[in-house]
Image (cartoon, rainbow, N blue to C red; front, side, top):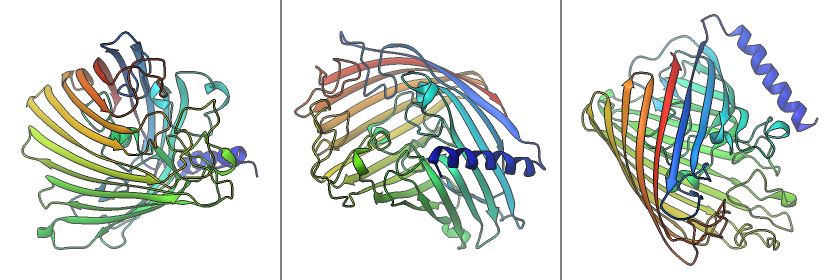
Length: 417
């Protein structure tokens, strides 16, 4: 059966099942985010610090509409365990997210083609999944469908926006954004004085893929611990699988592309370790470290592609970012982030090899509970043989700067429950 028809059938099935699950009233909510971003050089290119914003100016980042039925559970895949007694009854729910804007650009789905082709702002149903709970162990929950990745500190959902920053870290740029498949999480019974512990396991189509471009599936697994007072979290998240771009199909494997002319498996794995701690109601920190590697293939990119577009030798990347937040007033928060990432062999399809350093500072101000305004200043420096900043849009190895100041301000309106 054609993959497009199969996907349509799966999505239609999700809608049909959702009609059965609405014993409780579904919740409709969302957000609209507008941002303006500028740099200090003569180019209007703000990539890579602007992430999905390539050009200076005002952007509609997202207009999200989320339709969901929540479940009663003491554990959630991609997030981890929660305190309290486990529910004794099974539960079923669903979630469907629609998005219009620039932040939809890298979420591959059945509606990516056609009307979205060659458009900066895309209209996508980027998440659609069933979720459920079973009273197994100390609590078990699962999701099945299309959902944002759990890997890394800056996951896209369900606690979106996950950090206090408008721009993203390099660790985020080097990780997956979404998956299609199934994932479960089990809360492990243990002494409450030792905290809460959970394990998670998922089988997915790969990185950002609706349909896999080879016959192998990709494995997700995680370990999560929460302190008894719930102030300290430790999250170890992992992904591993054959991501060989079979038959040269690379449109769904960004940012890493590797091809074997003999059809050999080319494994990619990435690992993320995050420690978060809340000192009090005002102050908290998060430290995130990442490591990733991609096996190289034997097919070299043609002259129409940038150097490194196809990885021909085993490549790795690793780094760390430190995030600090201080909500010194009820309506105002200070955010600071320091980061470093090294791309040892130039694995990223749009960035040269080298060391990337970034410092970011901002204020988040809530005039009311539904509106957040956030001015931000960022400085980035690069050490290596290329020039990742300035130049053409997008950079793709044609930049002309190794430093960049970026100033931005964004406003987000939250609506619904």
